[in-house]
Length: 121
Image 1 (cartoon, rainbow, N blue to C red):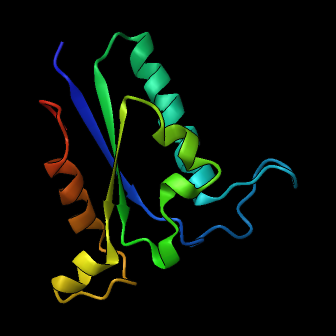
Image 2 (cartoon, rainbow, N blue to C red):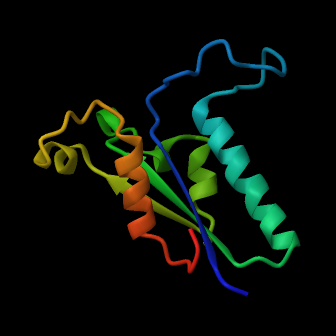
């Protein structure tokens, strides 16, 4: 079967993390928690169906050095051998003349596509 690459982008900046807990007061529902849960759940679903899959996680211009591999939730998901973690540094964003504090989602996805190994993305 052909290999599929799934590209996701994000960064650990706390954006949208407040007041989103649909479960209870003790369950965190941060972006990083949702990313971890999604990656692990989708990988399991692909495995059950015998699909050869790779996740490419693009960490776009981490603020204050907060890369996704340092987060308590996403760090475990990124250790999976089916997950490739790509960090786009703030310096490389600045070299293009862009603001490293902005989140350029489409450019980040293109980085993920260029770093994918699958026949299909």
